[in-house]
Every structure is written in structure tokens, then in C-alpha cells.
Image 1 (cartoon, rainbow, N blue to C red):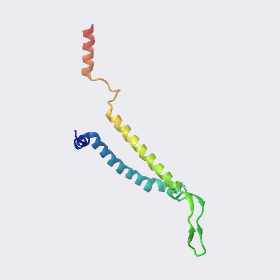
Image 2 (image 1 turned 90 degrees about the vertical axis):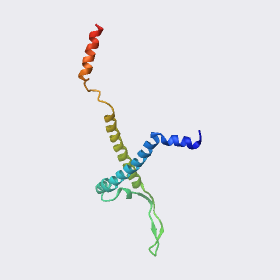
Image 3 (image 1 turned 135 degrees about the vertical axis):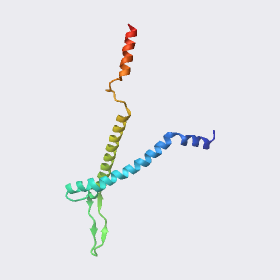
Image 4 (image 1 turned 30 degrees about the horizontal axis):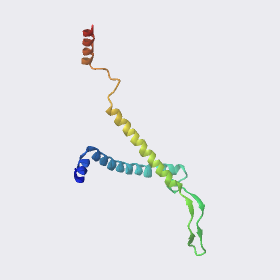
Length: 133
């Protein structure tokens, strides 16, 4: 079997198409959650932290130096941990929403174990038990 025929067979399988659709939907969903975090959640967190944006949080190791002419001669050296925190919050929200979605999906897929058997099943069981005697 030639390389092109194998590739056509690979592409024709449903798993590849499902994976491609999942990646596209996942990327779009990531943008939605990022927008939610940037536009709604982080401003609320910023209000709680005194009005500063979380992504602007940093630990300054060496402050910037300004020369006599007013120009910056050396840029500040800082650890910018705020952007990292914002990315972690994005990730946790995306993971939580995906968890909730999969939990609901799995609940819909599996039949309810607590459901009572149908009347026909009960009658058939009774007939079976009577025939065994």
C-alpha cells in the first residue's frame, strides 16, 4: 500500500476528524475563558488588591535609573509574577469548566442504574422463575 493510500485511510478515520474538531472548539473555548478572566474576574480581583491589575504585579530587584537628562539609563530588573498568576487562573478556570462539561456528558451517556426494570422485564422474570420450578 502506497504512502498516499495509507494517508487517505488515516484521514478517512473518524478519530482524526473528531480530534481536529476538538482542537478547534478547544481553542475557541480558551479564548472565551480568557476573555472572561481578563474582562470580569481579574478586574474584580484587582479591585480587591487596591486597584492594581494582577498582571502588573512584580517584584522589583533593581529599580530603573534615570540620568540627569531625564532619560532612563538602565531599565528596572523585576520578576513579573502577575502575568504568571493570571495564566494560572486562566488554566484553572478552563480545566474546571471542562471538568464540569465532561461530568455532565458522562452522566448523560451512562444509563441510570437506579431505574426500575420495565414491567415486561418483571413479567419475563416471573415466567422464568415459574418455569424453573
